[in-house]
Image (tube, rainbow, N blue to C red):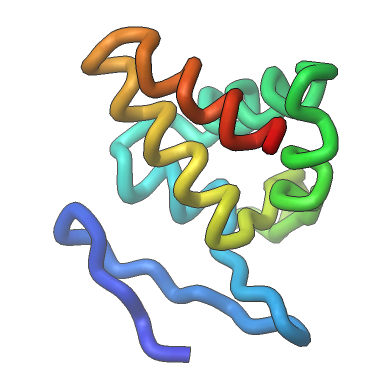
Length: 108
C-alpha cells in the first residue's frame, strides 16, 4: 500500500483482508510521543468498559522486533482506531469536549 504523510511523517498502512492497519509505533512517530505512552493510552482505552467493544475491534494486540532483535508488544490500529487516537491527541490540546463526543460515537 502507498505511504500516507501525516504531520510531515510517512505512515505505511498495511492491508489485511478488508481491514487497513497502522501500528502504535506509527502513532508515536506521527504525534511525536513515546511509544510506551501510546501503549499506555491504548491499554487505558481497552480497559474502559463503556467503549470496550469499539476498542477490541480497532486495537488488536500485535508485536514487532526492535533494533536489537527483541520481540516487543505493539497494537495494530484500524482506520477508526487511528482516528480515535488522533482525536484523543487533539483533546489533550483542546479539552474534554472531543473525548465526550468520541465516547458517544463509540457507543452508537
